[in-house]
Structures are given as structure tokens and as C-alpha cells.
Length: 206
Image 1: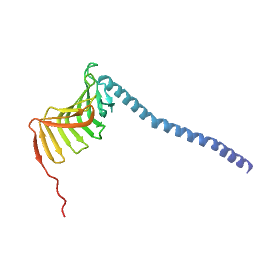
Image 2: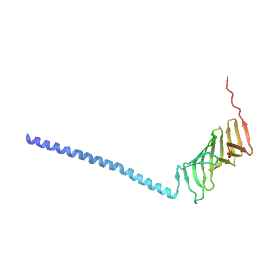
Image 3: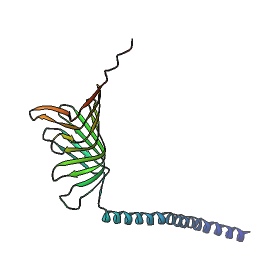
Image 4: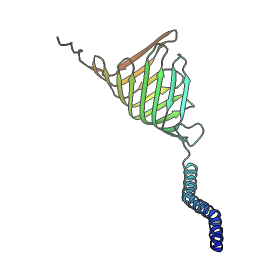
């Protein structure tokens, strides 16, 4: 009986050592196997991204902010931007948004699906579904719009459709600019075959 107990005790002692080691080896193997495919995928994705950037250099989510000569805060964002073929050539951008906060409290938001950023001339050229929202209640839609980076100036030389607080306006040209360097005022100028459809505000029903 003593021999049997000794054999049993020895077996238990060895199993207490071997079983934890075996479990650790299994866990280590599973950990390595689970990580290896992800590591390979990450390396492949990184190589592909580097190759794309070499063939088509671009910036993701670029931002630009500054202060205009008339004291307005200007911010430009885009989903992506690509440099021009030469250092002086305009950069192309997609999903552009422009925010202008003027000193007198007027807010201007501009969105466009595409455009050009010309740092050499300090101008933006927005195209494809341009929408301008003024905090004063105006909404303007145009096919194209030029804007300055150094001053508050937005110009459309093409047809513009305007939703105003008092009705709808169609015009062949639109310009938003600072009126006077000494006065914090801003002017919306619509010209060239302007047509107004006046819609008086609805009176409250008794």
C-alpha cells in the first residue's frame, strides 16, 4: 500500500508541474497564431498605402485658418487635397467647407464638392454644388464661386439662386464683400437680370 501511495503522490506532483506548463504553451501558440494574419494584413495595407501616396500624393483632412484684412476669421477644411504639377500650380481639393466669422457677427458657411486652392494668388475656386449660408437668413446656390483668402470677398460670375427671408431671388451675378475698411459692414450685391419673387411673412392666425 505504501508503494501505491508513493506512486500516486509522485504522479500528482509531476502533473502539478506539467499541466501549467502545457497550458502556457497552448496559450502562447494560440496567441501567436491569432496575431500572425493581422500582422501580415497590416503590412500589406501599409505597403499599398505607401504605393498609392507615391503614385498620387495627397493630404487627408487638410485644414487652413487665418485672419483676413478686415478682421474676419476664416477656416478652410477639405476631405482631401492634391498638390498641383508645379509648386506654383493650384491644389485640387474635395468636399470643401469654408467658415467666415466677421467682426460684426455675420457668419458665412460655404460648402462645395470640389475646388482649387491657389496660394500664389490667395484665391479659392469652388465648384460643383456650391451652397452659401448666411447667418442673416440667406441661402445662396451657384455652380461656381471664387473667394479670397486675405479678405472677405465671395464672387459668383454665374447664375445664383437665393432663398431670402422675404422671398426668392434669381440673379446672374453675386458678390459678398466688406464695404469699408473703417466700418465693420458687409454687403450682399446681386446684379445682372435680378428677379425677385416676394413672399410676405405669414401672419399669425388668431
